[in-house]
Picture 1 (cartoon, helix red, strand yellow):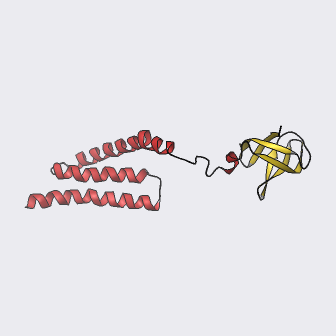
Picture 2 (cartoon, one colour):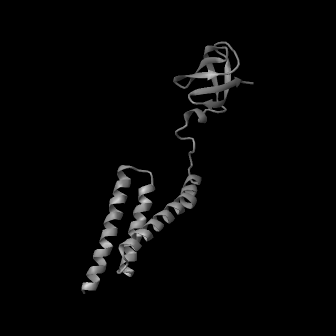
Picture 3 (cartoon, rainbow, N blue to C red):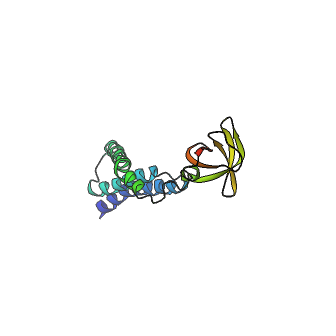
Length: 151
Protein backbone atom coordinates (compact mmCIF):
# COMPACT_ATOMS: atom_id res chain seq x y z
CA UNK A 1 0.00 0.00 0.00
CA UNK A 2 2.76 2.45 0.90
CA UNK A 3 4.49 1.58 -2.38
CA UNK A 4 1.39 2.69 -4.32
CA UNK A 5 1.21 5.93 -2.31
CA UNK A 6 4.91 6.58 -2.89
CA UNK A 7 4.44 6.09 -6.64
CA UNK A 8 1.50 8.49 -6.72
CA UNK A 9 3.38 11.14 -4.73
CA UNK A 10 6.31 10.94 -7.17
CA UNK A 11 3.87 11.29 -10.08
CA UNK A 12 1.86 14.11 -8.53
CA UNK A 13 4.81 16.50 -8.66
CA UNK A 14 5.12 16.03 -12.40
CA UNK A 15 1.38 16.25 -12.95
CA UNK A 16 1.26 19.45 -10.91
CA UNK A 17 4.06 20.87 -13.04
CA UNK A 18 2.12 19.82 -16.15
CA UNK A 19 -1.00 21.63 -14.93
CA UNK A 20 0.99 24.77 -14.09
CA UNK A 21 2.65 24.83 -17.51
CA UNK A 22 -0.63 24.27 -19.33
CA UNK A 23 -2.27 27.01 -17.20
CA UNK A 24 0.63 29.31 -18.05
CA UNK A 25 -0.09 28.58 -21.73
CA UNK A 26 -3.55 30.06 -21.21
CA UNK A 27 -2.00 33.28 -19.88
CA UNK A 28 0.78 33.50 -22.50
CA UNK A 29 -0.44 31.55 -25.55
CA UNK A 30 2.02 30.31 -28.11
CA UNK A 31 1.77 26.50 -27.90
CA UNK A 32 5.27 26.25 -26.41
CA UNK A 33 4.38 25.74 -22.74
CA UNK A 34 1.61 23.35 -23.71
CA UNK A 35 4.10 20.89 -25.16
CA UNK A 36 6.50 21.15 -22.23
CA UNK A 37 3.47 20.56 -19.99
CA UNK A 38 2.72 17.44 -22.01
CA UNK A 39 6.28 16.25 -21.38
CA UNK A 40 5.74 16.80 -17.64
CA UNK A 41 2.51 14.78 -17.78
CA UNK A 42 4.35 11.96 -19.56
CA UNK A 43 6.98 12.11 -16.81
CA UNK A 44 4.18 11.61 -14.28
CA UNK A 45 3.25 8.39 -16.07
CA UNK A 46 6.89 7.32 -16.26
CA UNK A 47 7.21 7.80 -12.50
CA UNK A 48 4.24 5.47 -11.96
CA UNK A 49 6.04 2.76 -13.92
CA UNK A 50 9.57 3.50 -12.63
CA UNK A 51 9.11 4.96 -9.12
CA UNK A 52 12.75 4.56 -8.10
CA UNK A 53 14.14 6.84 -10.79
CA UNK A 54 16.62 9.27 -9.20
CA UNK A 55 16.15 13.02 -9.57
CA UNK A 56 18.99 13.48 -12.06
CA UNK A 57 17.54 10.72 -14.23
CA UNK A 58 14.13 12.37 -14.01
CA UNK A 59 15.55 15.74 -15.02
CA UNK A 60 17.45 14.31 -18.00
CA UNK A 61 14.46 12.29 -19.16
CA UNK A 62 12.18 15.32 -18.78
CA UNK A 63 14.56 17.47 -20.84
CA UNK A 64 14.68 14.83 -23.59
CA UNK A 65 10.88 14.45 -23.55
CA UNK A 66 10.38 18.24 -23.69
CA UNK A 67 12.72 18.57 -26.66
CA UNK A 68 11.11 15.59 -28.39
CA UNK A 69 7.53 16.81 -28.04
CA UNK A 70 8.51 20.35 -29.13
CA UNK A 71 10.28 18.97 -32.22
CA UNK A 72 7.26 16.80 -33.03
CA UNK A 73 5.05 19.90 -32.77
CA UNK A 74 7.30 22.08 -34.97
CA UNK A 75 7.95 19.41 -37.62
CA UNK A 76 4.58 17.66 -37.90
CA UNK A 77 1.68 19.26 -36.05
CA UNK A 78 2.30 22.95 -36.82
CA UNK A 79 2.74 22.49 -40.61
CA UNK A 80 -0.39 20.33 -40.73
CA UNK A 81 -2.36 23.02 -38.88
CA UNK A 82 -1.13 25.71 -41.29
CA UNK A 83 -2.30 23.65 -44.27
CA UNK A 84 -5.84 23.57 -42.85
CA UNK A 85 -6.05 27.38 -42.76
CA UNK A 86 -9.04 28.21 -44.97
CA UNK A 87 -8.37 31.98 -44.87
CA UNK A 88 -4.61 32.50 -45.05
CA UNK A 89 -4.98 36.25 -45.79
CA UNK A 90 -7.47 36.94 -42.99
CA UNK A 91 -5.34 39.55 -41.20
CA UNK A 92 -3.51 40.78 -44.30
CA UNK A 93 -5.92 43.30 -45.74
CA UNK A 94 -3.41 44.73 -48.20
CA UNK A 95 -2.57 41.34 -49.71
CA UNK A 96 -6.27 40.54 -50.08
CA UNK A 97 -6.56 43.56 -52.39
CA UNK A 98 -4.10 42.25 -54.97
CA UNK A 99 -5.89 42.09 -58.32
CA UNK A 100 -8.59 44.55 -57.23
CA UNK A 101 -9.40 47.64 -59.30
CA UNK A 102 -9.50 50.88 -57.32
CA UNK A 103 -10.03 54.57 -58.10
CA UNK A 104 -7.35 57.23 -57.64
CA UNK A 105 -8.60 60.06 -55.35
CA UNK A 106 -5.35 62.04 -55.10
CA UNK A 107 -3.26 62.27 -58.28
CA UNK A 108 -0.18 60.08 -58.49
CA UNK A 109 2.77 62.45 -58.83
CA UNK A 110 6.35 61.22 -58.83
CA UNK A 111 5.03 57.70 -58.26
CA UNK A 112 2.96 58.41 -55.10
CA UNK A 113 -0.71 59.19 -54.59
CA UNK A 114 -3.86 57.97 -52.85
CA UNK A 115 -6.75 55.73 -53.84
CA UNK A 116 -10.10 54.94 -52.28
CA UNK A 117 -10.61 51.35 -51.20
CA UNK A 118 -14.05 50.75 -49.75
CA UNK A 119 -14.56 53.49 -47.15
CA UNK A 120 -10.85 54.23 -46.59
CA UNK A 121 -8.06 55.93 -48.49
CA UNK A 122 -4.76 54.11 -49.05
CA UNK A 123 -1.35 55.37 -50.11
CA UNK A 124 -0.43 54.02 -53.54
CA UNK A 125 2.74 53.82 -55.60
CA UNK A 126 2.73 53.44 -59.34
CA UNK A 127 2.73 55.32 -62.64
CA UNK A 128 1.69 58.99 -62.59
CA UNK A 129 -2.03 59.43 -63.26
CA UNK A 130 -4.95 61.79 -62.62
CA UNK A 131 -7.85 61.69 -60.16
CA UNK A 132 -10.55 59.23 -61.25
CA UNK A 133 -8.12 56.87 -63.01
CA UNK A 134 -8.70 53.20 -62.41
CA UNK A 135 -5.65 51.28 -61.22
CA UNK A 136 -5.12 47.65 -60.31
CA UNK A 137 -3.37 46.57 -57.12
CA UNK A 138 -0.36 44.43 -58.08
CA UNK A 139 1.48 44.25 -54.75
CA UNK A 140 1.75 45.50 -51.18
CA UNK A 141 4.67 46.93 -49.25
CA UNK A 142 3.73 47.63 -45.65
CA UNK A 143 0.65 49.88 -45.81
CA UNK A 144 1.36 51.07 -49.35
CA UNK A 145 -0.38 49.48 -52.31
CA UNK A 146 1.67 48.99 -55.48
CA UNK A 147 -0.51 49.68 -58.50
CA UNK A 148 -0.47 49.57 -62.28
CA UNK A 149 -2.84 51.22 -64.75
CA UNK A 150 -5.92 49.05 -65.14
CA UNK A 151 -6.21 47.68 -68.64
